[in-house]
Image (cartoon, rainbow, N blue to C red; front, side):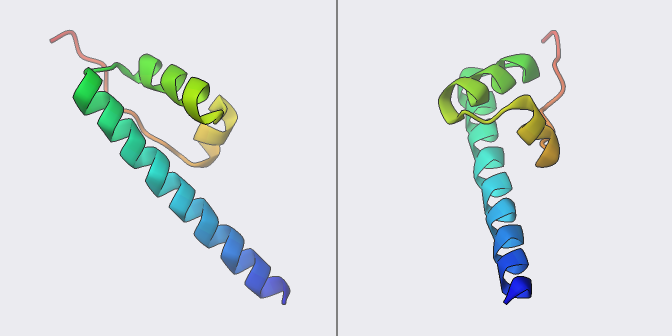
Length: 66
């Protein structure tokens, strides 16, 4: 039973990371947002904290001056 709970938690984490990653891509592509702005948008609209972003190992596109 404990293995099932751990497996479900891992699957939920993978799904969460996938959803947040897709949302990050949309914000980046449609809004041409920089990494800092993406983090702020995620915090404001999803209530995901910077710590949770680190746990999910999210990588934002590099900021460029173009």
